[in-house]
Amino acid sequence: MMAKFSVRKPLTVLVAVVAILVLGYVSFTGMTPDMLPNMDMPYVMVMTAYPGATPEKVETEVTRPLEQSMATLENIDSVSSTSSSNFSMISLQFTDDADLDVITVDILQKIEAV
Image 1: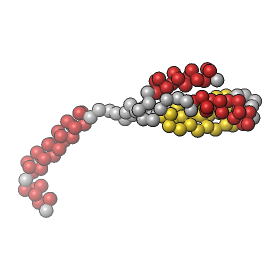
Image 2 (image 1 turned 60 degrees about the horizontal axis):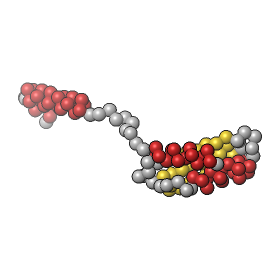
Image 3 (image 1 turned 180 degrees about the vertical axis):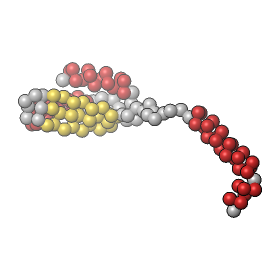
Image 4 (image 1 turned 90 degrees about the vertical axis):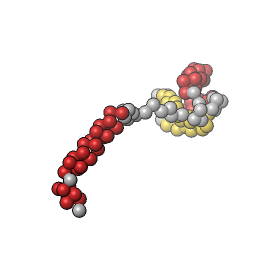
């Protein structure tokens, strides 16, 4: 049925194809290239190195004091940590309305204090 219509009304088909191409071009040029939109993720990772230390020593001397200090930050949602030989990693999750620029400064101050 479409084949017969296309043969009988070639001008109508041509106009429809051109209209689709023009609309596609207009739509494509109007799109913004936001492949990676600007998003604030309310997560911060604090990694510390303690060369030659056992996991237990890292836990007691580095991870716990830092965790306790970080738990007092404003807008903190959760704190989790991992202690291994030679390093520790603390994951901080904040509420969505947290200002990460201010929090980053606060974190650096707390690390220096510990």
